[in-house]
Length: 209
Image (cartoon, rainbow, N blue to C red; front, top):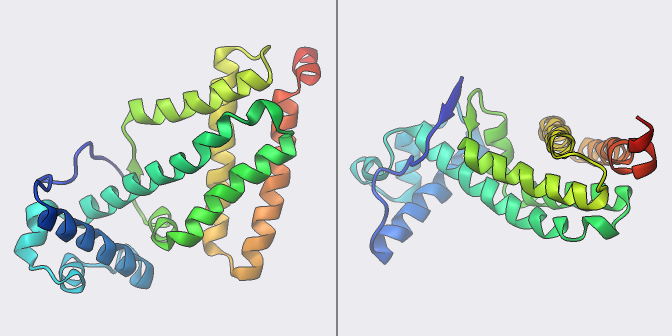
């Protein structure tokens, strides 16, 4: 099941009090998603934990799915804000350094925002706006082209998508693992991403293909 919601918030807060209330609802939802998971979470529980009435919550969100989507959208923007500065350094980094820093920035965020992992494991796919999603891929693709100018636009976009899919696969395993297992998962996927980038971004290897 998937969902594309361009504006899940029914009413954008116009006053500071409303902004605080909305933030409180999202913070309460995040904690409940971590405590009981997406499926067991209820709008009633979120309202009670945030100190809001059901009516006040429904003023902002039509359902639980919209609350979750808003959090996913927020988290995705925060993650991108962490990895995008790395793109400016790609040209000077080794493949291993890039893979290490890219994955570290994402896993560090997941540790700080545990609800992100809970929502990734939810039995619903929260799809981003295609234009926003493409912009993220283009940012990575441009960095890859700077690293290896022989890459075509199509090749660099494919490499960007493949790299993100590698990280997405890592996060699925990371979410399920215990503390020791998380360390092993991260180490293994750093190796995997390094090997992939070495094959794609090394000019000598790319020209030989």
